[in-house]
Amino acid sequence: MRIAFLVLLLANLVLFVWGQGHLGTQGAGREPERMAQQLAPEKLRIVQAQ
Image (cartoon, rainbow, N blue to C red; front, side, top):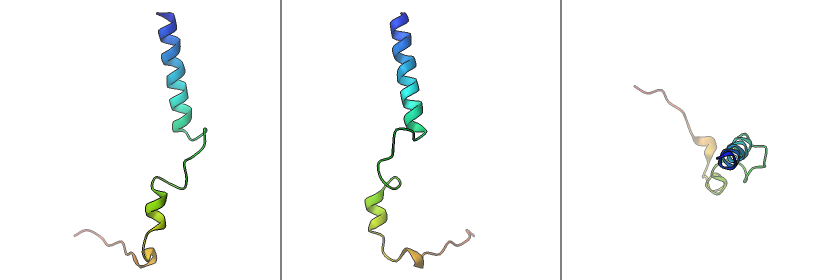
């Protein structure tokens, strides 16, 4: 029972550290390929919903 607790605690700690970004990143943002393929992003306009 103690071993199971320690394994789960270690897994939780590793996932927390990974979620905080301390283990490195996988590129620029969530979808780097999609961001690189954007056409004229400067032409985007944000409008208010009606």
